[in-house]
Length: 294
Image: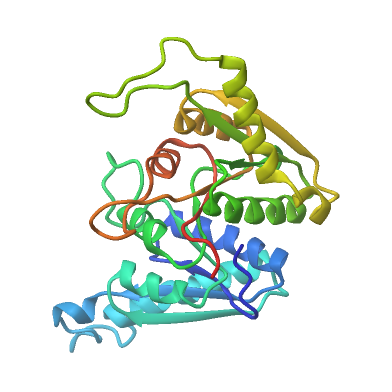
């Protein structure tokens, strides 16, 4: 679980309604964690060599850079309305959104993003920046989609891996902050061939398989209830595909937390299939934890 002393909550803004919704969620997260909020806008236009200042015959407050500064100012003011006691700073960083936010994530406790910004295609389920940052950030990423629920548990996917432990730590802390319960879900499948020539037993003990999966879930949760005694925990062992189960359960959760098990030639740049599915098809805010703490 990320616990960088003094690290801020970072929220990316671009002037869209989705980004302002993310600012509201980020402000509440920063207050709950007793951390400052850093509002960041990636100013991409210098990369294209276009004029950035006011036009010679236009108003003095015109131009691309002034507009970018207004986006940051508006977002900082929005955070101040939601949490007047919060320390909020605005930052305008030259560069494309994904590289800028990945740099910010190196020193952040949490990065918060909306699902889609300006220029997004209506047919896409989620914005490309949210996907890329979630897949590569050095800290947990909270993607805000839809209207956050005020009730329901914090849902976390459990598979017994190191990333699953990190996701559990984040989820328990989030449940404690929200004064709600935790729903820990472990989905499992019966044996199936995964490649040519695989030989499977003609008979296998379903009860033994279920008992083994119950052991995985119990061992993953061991110790967390002692650390968070006020968080009620519900364990759910579900036969089925993890992605489908988590998408369904997310409909009644106020927050979903998953680990990202990316693989491939791009060296960790890809989200795992489960986190990718929940990111695109889940309901409500989603936190993706990409790597365990050092």
